[in-house]
Image (cartoon, rainbow, N blue to C red):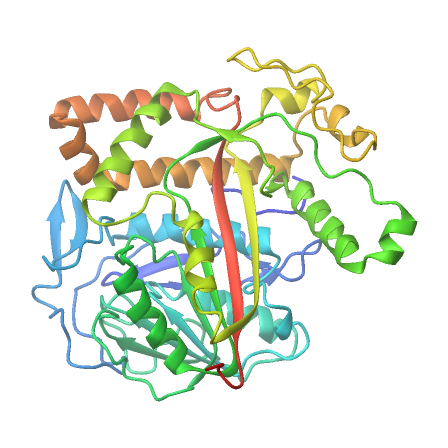
Amino acid sequence: MEPGYVPAQKYSSVSSRGGGVYAGSGSSHPDHPSIMTSNENLSSKEGSIAPSTASTSTKHSLTAAKAFIMRNNRLYINQPSLLYPLPIDLTELHRQSLRTLMLLQLFGGPTTAPEFSNKPPQRVLEVGCGSAFWSMMCHRYFAQHGHSSISFTGLDIAPLVGMGLDAGWRPDKDMRWRFVQHDVRRRPWPFIDGEFDLIMVKDMSLSLSTSMRDSQQLFEEYLRVLKPGGVIEFWESDHAVRMLRPHVLRAPVTSKAADSDSDSDDSSEEEDDVEKLGAYIMTNNTPLSAPLNPFLVEYNGWAIKGLDALGLSAVPCALIGAYLLQEVDTLMELRSKRIAVPLSEIRWEREGVGGVVTKDGKSYIDSMKRKGRLIDSRVDKRKGLTTSQAALRRTALETMVGLILCLEPIIREVSGKSQDEWDGWCGKMMNDLLREGGTSWGECLEVGAWCARKKLTPTS
């Protein structure tokens, strides 16, 4: 196997006691030292659900006896006012851990903020921490680089972290860690002003309403607990699927252009790194359209309608940048990185960009030359994926299929399917998507990272 990515079947060892998830020790990858991985298989243990004795918490909004409810053989949070549509069982935590590992690989580490390249944050808050998997990987990343004194805090409405464990439990034994059980909709949060150097908000789009009022109040709390000069960062994935159309990648940058524009050079290197992983940097000119796979077409319609009825967005990556721009009086140095991860090998990759005719009959012959430069020959000569590229795309596909299965309650309601009809549709959907060529037209998972610094002195 080629180095470069963790296959979907193997990743950091994760086990469960009472619904909490923790990871075994990992090791650095020889070709990607910034990402720590392990080849241990998943394992799980049965345990009882009990209040955490290891948690620092406010008065619980979810008691141990009433915290969870079973629906369609999946475990969900039992709180009517919370519209979170995903289960919180071990299967879903494993899916989220796989997605997190994929994002760590794509973004080159646990944060995209350049401020922490040489000097790491000292106090980190993970909002909606779940199993604390990101916090653990962030700790390992910085510990590997000689920084092991970072203090991590996990915040979540559900007592997922530390349930049933002894008072000394933590994601890693040498990690400075505390868990705070709290509903982020209840403000103020149980933290002092300016407490954290880094706030990570990862995969929270299905937990919070998209209304401007709710978003504004939430941002006020983010900014209150973030210290001046500190960084807030968002990692998110879209829940609807689009299709990446044939296009020309970045043209080669000449040495003269690179000397005159260092930002362009850095961007070129970044794009190279993402391309080597088998993904594509997205820009405003990246051509995308509706998927052609019939099951994804149906899923998109149901998911968009069902999530919208809950006040949630199926395309949160289109919203985060706008939310950050509204805080320009308080935030500075806004940055973003959008990446499209194809769900399998794409036909036009193997055949070459020039002359490709898509299923809808549109040709892209010589349509995307930039400023007279030649098309990058690397695209035309691509003859299949490497093992690591195929593994990354398989991970994207499997986590997307897992999401579709997780959204069963709202999809069944919108589609009007009976249980038998849903089971039949899911079986056909999985057979179609997971077989070779099921998403070969360019269907992709869209992910993104956004970060900004809090101004030292807010403008009036």
